[in-house]
Length: 144
Image (cartoon, rainbow, N blue to C red; front, side, top):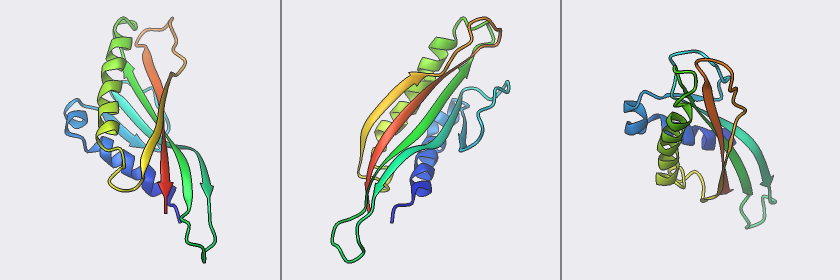
């Protein structure tokens, strides 16, 4: 059996306990609603995305296999009308990706990362205190 919540939690623990992330003042949440509150940035949220599980019969000798997407939202805020929000987001994202790269099998929870895909979340360009965010989707291969 494959326990998706355990895998998602392993990614959360890896990011939330990383000393650089902690010392940089990140707010790290697991499956919490994305909030635009001031004073919580840099912010990282870990969420379960899409998954596909291929179960096998109990009497068979083949393991269950799955591809599980874990979504990471990385957000940063600029108190200067967005002037440096992009640079701040890029720096925050680099720290998070370094943690993902340093623990590719999530302490034995998964076999490998199949892909990492990033995309920007819609960014308003006409407001002060602008929040910039990126969605990073890590696809993990799991056998159990």
